Length: 322
Image (cartoon, rainbow, N blue to C red; front, top):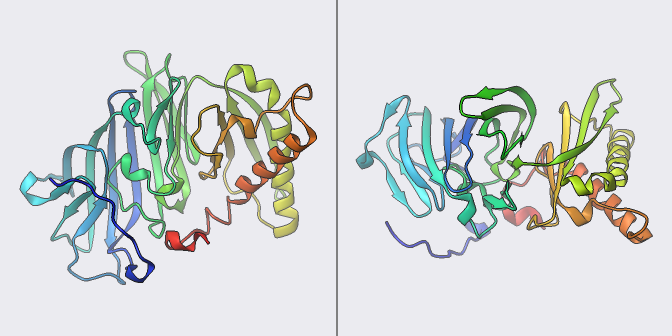
């Protein structure tokens, strides 16, 4: 093992990824101090990469429990772990790699990856936070389909959310429950999101130009729900404007906004699950100015428009942000 040290990243050193991820299945057993994450990565060698290159996955602050290759439990001598990578040499052109790691959201002071916030579990993965959740090629030019299953105590975490459409849910022993989400559109890891906690929601629907009904939710603390009406109206106006001006119809069955007091960024466009600092969503006439209302409308629109420009179409590398 070696100490992780900052390193300079220069555009001239860009190389295509050695492996592409065709699909990933994630399973979370959520606990504030000891969350288990199982990742199943279906990989294929990138024709634009080096023929004999090893697989190098990013990971920070992870306690590795096991690694499997095509169902075979690998020995520690068959891979290398450093504070920020997991390297597996000698892989075929197509392979399935499974990992299980343990993380401590309550001790995550970086507020990147999965962290605890006032009893809620929340993620922030842009730009390189996903590597604090599980081992993965954590770069914007590796896009894949995510299927995510969350398991947690029902009393502590009655609300379970991730990207995409909810395809399964149910009860588990010992007062726990689960929910599974399928995101059918490939995305980079920085757009992954997870929220678990005790929140209430303002709900509505939007009928798209083709006649599909999309379920809309703004989740927040109970004391804020009655202040979400302007944000919901702004969301529906944004969806209609994107259809009218660009012909871009929303592409999932549900759109979630989560608004919490201590989200460490202003807002984040995670696919189908935007996370906001509450001050950019809440408004009531007795305390909000006209400028506040205008600002909320602009930020809601900005994050919604990322559904296509920034999500479905994204960066090759972080130098393209400019």
